[in-house]
Image (cartoon, rainbow, N blue to C red; front, side):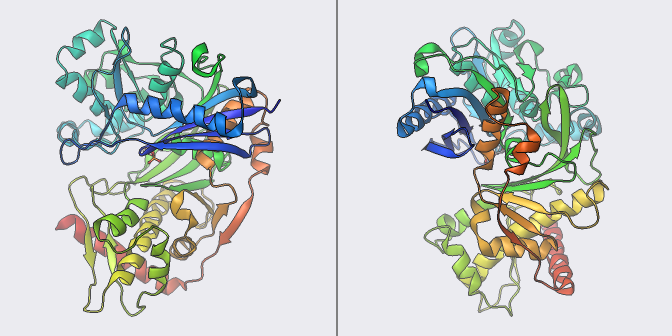
Length: 497
Ligand code: G3P
C-alpha cells in the first residue's frame, strides 16, 4: 500500500489537487479552471458551488491518475485563495450570495469612510491589516447589507461565514464542521492576531454577528473527516493554511529573517519575524505566518496585485505575445538605450502604497519603443515592486540582518531566468529558486503529513529544501540605484496624475 497526502490548492482561477507520496514527491495532480464573474467594474465573484465541485472533481481525478484508492490516503491538507468571502445557510448548505473575491474593490467607499472616521490605526492594532477592500471584513458587511434579512438571520445563528477553506471543510465534512485556521482568520479583518481570537470590537465596527464566525484552529489540527460517500471512506483533514502562508512553509521559511516571494497573478512576499509581532511603519501587513502547537509565528507581508497578470496583459490586452514564455525572448531583444517604465497599477497599487484609485502608466516612450521594450518593462515592473516591499521590510525590521537577505522565489514567473536575474540585480541580493516549485501545495501537504506522522518536523523538512538555481546581482550599484530612483519617480507621478 502506498501512503499519500492529498493536498487541495483552491486558487483564484483554478482548483488543484496534488497527491504527495511518503517522500513528499508529487505522485499525481489534477487541475480545473472555473468561471470568473465580473458583474461591475472592479467587482470579482465566484460561485461557491464551482469552488466546491472543481475541488471535489480534481481530488477524484488525482486519485484516479495515481491509481490510488481511499485506503492509500493518510490525510488531506488544504490551502486556498485567501480573503475571498462566502456566506451560506447552515440548514440547506446553500450560499446566500456569490463568493466575493479578494480582488473585488466594491467596498472602497466603506473603507474610505472608516478611514475618514479615524479608525485605521485601531484596525491595524487589532488585526495587523489596513483599511482596504482586499480583506474579508468589509466584503462580509456588504453581503449582510445587500441580501435581504441576512443580518437578522446571521444573528439568529442561521448563517455561516467562511473563507474558502472553511467553505470546503463544511462541504467535505457534510456540514459537520464550521472551522478555519489561524492564517485564514488573520485575513478577515475580524481577528485579533495578538490575542488569537475573534475581535468583538472589529465585529461591532463592521456590524458582523459573531454567531456566524467559524472556530479557529492551529494550522495542523483535526479539521474533521470527509463524508464517507465522497471518497469511499472518511479521510481526516489535518492541515490548513492560506496559500501564501502555505508557500512560506513549503519554502521552509521557519527561521526569523527568512523571506519568500510567490509570483502568481499577484506577488506576495512574506518575511518570517518569529514569535514577535512586528508593526510596520511602512504600510506592510502584520500577519500570522503559521500557528503550530498553539505557538504563533508572525510575518510581515507585502502584497502586490499585478505580477504575472502583467504578462497576461501583454498577451490578451496588447496581443504582443502568444504565450507567457515569449516574454523573456522579447525582453532580451529590448534596446538598452531606452528606459521604458511601466507602472502596472491596473487595479490601483497594493503595498506599500495602498492607492486604490490610481491606474497604470507608461513612461519614457520613444519612436523606437516597441513590443520588446514593453516586454522588458513588464518584467522589470515585477522586480521594482518586489524591491519596494523588501525596502519596506528592511526599514521595518532590524532582524533582517545587514542590507542583504536572500529571497526564495516560487510561482509561475519564477521560471523566467531573465525576470529572476533582474530581480536579483535590482534587489542587490541573492534570489534562490528551489527545485520543487509546488511550494504552496507542498506546505499544505506537509502540515497534514507531519500531523499524521508521515512527514518529519520543521527541522528535518527544512533540510530537504533543495536549490535549483541561485541568481546573484550582476548590475553595478550606481546603475541599480539610478534605475530604482527612476521607478520611484514614475510611481509618484502615477499616483498624482
Ligand atoms: O491574498 C490573495 C491570495 O491568497 C491569492 O492567491 O494564488 O490564488 O492568486 P492566488
